[in-house]
View 1 (cartoon, rainbow, N blue to C red):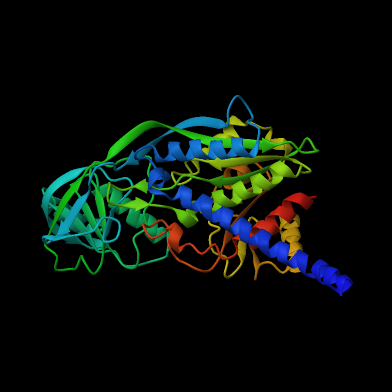
View 2: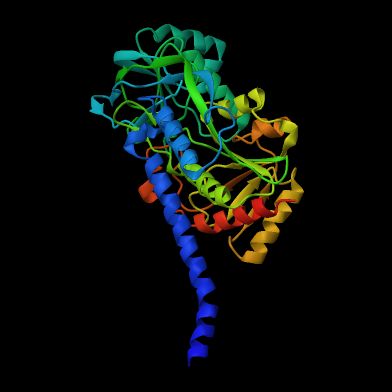
Length: 422
């Protein structure tokens, strides 16, 4: 009976241990996401020093884990211009107040305006046709342009629409009707007037006036910092594991963009990997980088490859982690077709371990912090999860609704991939 109990324990214990490890990893990731999306971090943006507070906290985590700084501390400072909205934003259509972040957003490059403006409804033809444009511009003085733009996914049309919007923002406030969801961003410049994006049920073709109180603050040479910590390996080559920690922050005091999936989830994955490799010496030197300024145009990762804290020619791989909070439909690997060997290794591990439902290949795309590395011929892969919630760049990307469905399985896949990297 005793022998049977011992044998049964030997059979069951590994499975139980694996389950416990997975739950511990998921719980650790959840704690990191919760901290990064808390009100105290201000959305990790450019109001109330949100990005600076997040950088300090990540540096503290690196120190706690025993990661080494590359220089005297964990920070790689740089500067860039950024437009911000620290003050209260108020918008109403025909006297009906709207909720900031859920009924309306201001374009990230908006300037300031205050007052009630009559709406001049314009179509693309009113702006593009020279004769009609002359007439339209003549009646815009003291009023706001209300753009009715046909929905499109065509890149040329979208670029043309943007040029129209920015031209009008030099002359008057601009209002745009949006179908679907409101998606915000970050701009490094400010136009003379604001552009207000309003959900279509609120703004109609018969709307007559809009009342606006919008004030922006352009921050010249905003002080930002990448956060770098490393673990010594057995080789002189480097593996860089990166995730951007910045997000959109506050759009006025009433709307905060928490950025749980984008990209507290990626930072959480980077931190759990850093913690593990701090206790298990890797083959290659491993540099963990929390990038600033990604939402403003990959500014932090661009500065990294310009400043070169490590020799780029000695980087074996740059692995970029961005939007890792779901995984119902597996993961996509960007740049897989350019880095076939690394992609094949990920697929092989996943097939052996039965971790994720799919490891999908995608070609090169300059859509996150791997791009400045790939442009300089540094081998780079970018991984994001698929399926689950659709919150993105909006006020609904919250920790409490982020499932972290495959966080532990993806952690296991990446840990083995980085450990066995050829």
